[in-house]
Each structure stands twice: as C-alpha cells, then as structure tokens.
Length: 250
Image (tube, rainbow, N blue to C red; front, side, top):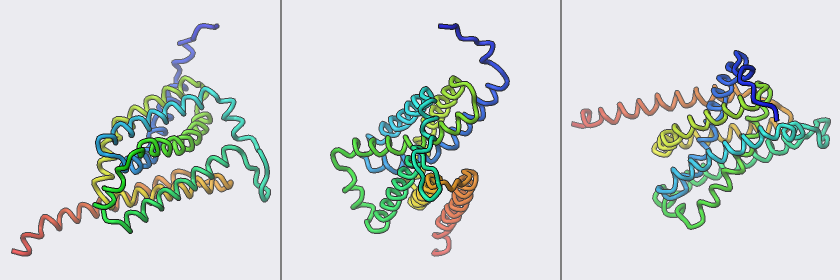
C-alpha cells in the first residue's frame, strides 16, 4: 500500500476546495437542521437534544459513506429509463421521493398548527415510540440531502480526503449551532411556520430537480434569507409595541 503523500495533499488547490466545500456544506446544512428541529419538537424535551445530535451524526456518516463509494454515486446519475424524453436516473428518483416527502411532512405540520391548539398538541405528541419514528424520518431526508450534497462536492474537489474533512468540520459547526437554531425556531411560532414553508419550498425544488428542471439553490436561499429578515423585523416591531403598551393604556 503506497504511503500517503502529505506534500501533494497540502496544496493551494486543496485548501481552496476545502474552505469552499466547508462553507457550502454549512449553508446547505441549514435546511437539514430546520427539518430535524421540526421533527424533534415532537419528542419529550429531554430527548430532543439527543435526537438532534444523533440526526446530524447520521447525516455525517451517510455523507462519508457516499464519498467513499464515489463509483456508486457515478452510477446513481446513470440513466435508468426515459419519460417524455427526460432521462431518469436513480438520483432523480431519490430527489423526487425526498421532495414529495418534505412537501407532505411540512404540509401536515402546518395543518396541525392551524387546526390544533398548542396545549393539546403538546399532550398528543409525547407518545411512546416517537423517537424511533423521528429517527426513521431523519434517515430518509438525510439520504436525500446527503446525496445532493455529495454530488455537488464531487464536482468541486478532486480529493476524497478534502471532501470528508469538509463534511466533518461542517457537521461539527452544525452540531454547535443546532441547539440555538432549534430553540429559536421552537420558541417563535411565526418563525416555525416560516421554517415549514421553507421546507415546502425546498421540497418543490427537489421535485423539480427530479423531473429535470434544475432550480439554482441561490434563488431558494436568497428567498429564505429575505423572508427571515422580514420576519425578524416583524418580531422587533411586535417587541417594541408590547413594551410600549402599558404606557399607552395608563
């Protein structure tokens, strides 16, 4: 077995690829954190941090395994059959299934928020066996996000080690931020509703991708950032109005 050549690994090209991939993985991982936050909110409070950490570690393991099987990734983009002149690959089927699953799950959660009071929902969601169901759903969507992320990474870097290091570092960043993001989302009902709407948007993007209609992710993330910025302003306005309310009534 040939020795690892450190001199050829620590190059400017690899350094740029590593920094770019790490940043990309962190940005793309935001939707994963949001989805995990929504799912783990169904668990008892004590189990939520454990489920979030386990979900992100599953995502890391899945991406590393996919990177180690780059030949399988190449086969995933090979045409299986054609529908209306559109070549369909295994990746397309996974994107389509994952997108439909996201749309279904987010729509279901929005319906629950609208139809049920929070107190009743809190009582109903803490049922035995929920942890297993939540982790199963996390695994399903992790597969979709991981496959899309790995295909993008393979196109940006030549070294498998660089890609794996970028994945490990980005998951570490997401693990550090997951509790803060989840807490913020779950403490603010309007932000949680916005997060569910984001998941529908991402699901539509995945379905379109699976049908051969690629939508640049930049448009999606810009729309998400803009909407979140508007909601932050709304939260600030509500806070100011609440603080001034006693003065106006006195």
